[in-house]
Image (cartoon, rainbow, N blue to C red; front, top):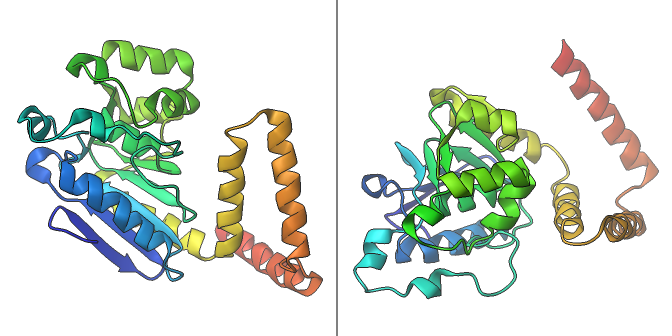
Length: 261
């Protein structure tokens, strides 16, 4: 469901979804809050897409909810809260890996959108802030769960209590992002990661990611049981046939040699 405020492009098996309201710092108005989840679901259902990149049109990644629109009284603030249990808050639960390419500021709801990605790559221009308390809104897209998981409870509390910005290098040191790259290298780097994902068995990647997600919501003991059950199910499905395992083992060895040469 592409719209003027959402750009979708695909190269190979990697799709890129770009929030495109640069004059509003890609703030999430009603149109985007509808189009973005629908577009991600559509890409997730496409067997030709093995990885999805989510980014914003410069200079921002996402400034969160469009407070100007909400302040006009035309839209209900309470309606923006996700009422049912959903791991990704505003975003739908996906089987396809979702890479966040944070090209600029990710603030409040924009930070929640970034946190909903499976992992993050930041431009050296990226900055992160939780300003919920400054604007007088309670988080409703999972921030109080996802931010402590990423940076630890004490750092999460500091970010929420102060509203201060965290720059890209600090975000990397805190574990909020996986990589920081030069701004002009952000999308090429993410597309390279997407191509690496696409080179794997897509069903296997999706099942592993589902196991991660299921295990994150239960005790450690239950998470181990979930993983064991998933492994048994995978073996019974025939996906681990000896001849297929040998073929893939050889491919892994060859790839490892090419990466260290």
